[in-house]
Amino acid sequence: KSLIKSTQDLFNFYIRLRDKKRNNGLCFLCKRRPIYSANHFISAANMGTRFEEDNACGGCKGCNYSEFIDRRQNRKDFFRQKHIEMVGEARVLELEDMARRITKMDRTNIAAIRKSLNEKISKLGG
Image (cartoon, rainbow, N blue to C red; front, side, top):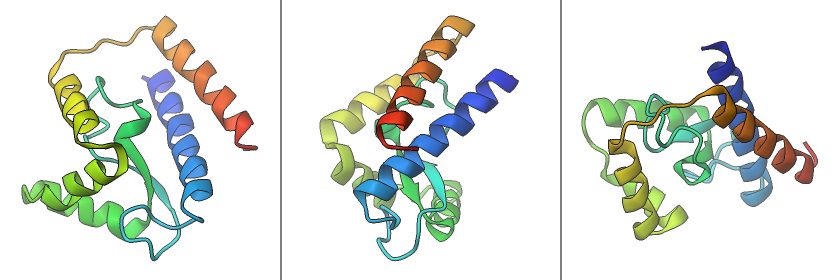
């Protein structure tokens, strides 16, 4: 589990770095406050979409908390619409389909993900 956790930390770092460059350092959702976290549209507990770049955006603390509250209250429309704006409806439907599948990660999968993330972080100057 610590390999998954450290890979998640690396993924979150990459998403924050990517979106700070894309969005002038501002939250993708509210576009007002600085990026604090990597917000997943489909929960990171889901291995099928956990490390999918199109499933995450750089967000502020407030939006990350609000997103959690909205999910608990089953009010996903706002965040789903933002997700569609980010990657398009076809990709959102694809991610939702991926989330319904059982996905297992082994050390080889994780190593490939880590290698890819490290290369992308290097390209961004992180």
